[in-house]
Image 1 (cartoon, rainbow, N blue to C red):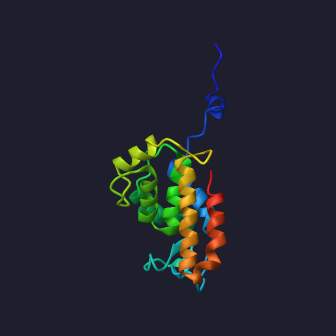
Image 2: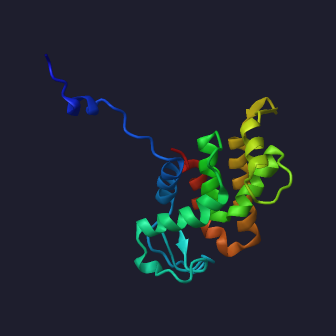
Length: 184
């Protein structure tokens, strides 16, 4: 009787799928650089996108990637409640914009696009339902998904912000490039 070598069988098993947060944070961490203290950055001292202004008790200069991921999970991912958004690329953009421009602002943008009421910056069951049932819009001989419109909304926000606060103009190209590079 032949014996089965279970070690060989395990080679052919698929690797466990990364969680959506793990996939998203990998992309976000690529966009967020190392240690920076730019005079025009309102967040002040920053590392991996974690700003001293918002995390005053953190030792930013010595912040590790592991600690940064913990902070992103606790203070961004969990409150944004993006598990259950069917479009993973859209969930990634909502998360990335929340990290870069504020959680509530990001959720309010998607709520406005999908017609979720109230527009309150909270991604609850009504908002998720509207996101997941959104059908692309036909306009100007083109079809626009929620992701297309969200990316466009991000662009408008950054351009408007740089126009209102000229000292932030130095970041505009980076913000716009970030939108295009935010993908799995």
